Image (cartoon, rainbow, N blue to C red; front, side, top):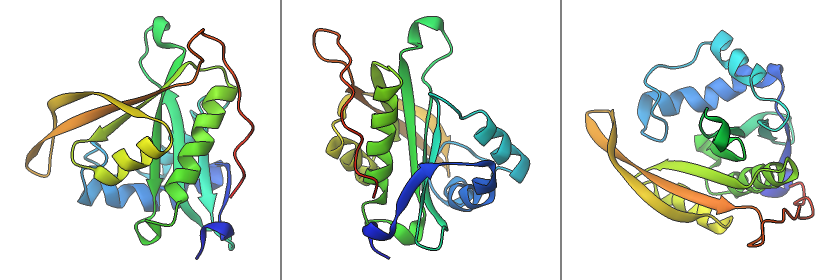
Length: 183
């Protein structure tokens, strides 16, 4: 499969099982998510139902409409002063790493965040996950800090690298860029 065969669209409830198929192996076998228990179909459907409008979920699909990756924007924190900041999540099926799908998803999420008037996008990445850090750097994020040993999974203490991309100009004006080309 090539990147040119991939399309990005808003996720629907019908994508829940495919998203679980990407996410749950990461829950069980990796530290890229701090979840410890795989999601049930009902939980994944509820997660999707909570993602709409400005806090959207998107999927990357191949030529046969199979979901090969997904991403989402979520509220950063629940206090009112954080309402202009979101957090991104990007996951690509293990068989499709290295094809540019993650970059296409993250680029679309940044565009959506900008179009919805957010000021900043945050990324929380497990320490040592150099591919995700490089992905975020390639889309304009910078490291702003590290939370030391804030998680424990697979018998290890885990750091979280904080990355951020400011969407507004230095004067505070929000400039919505042209929509990225749909891959």
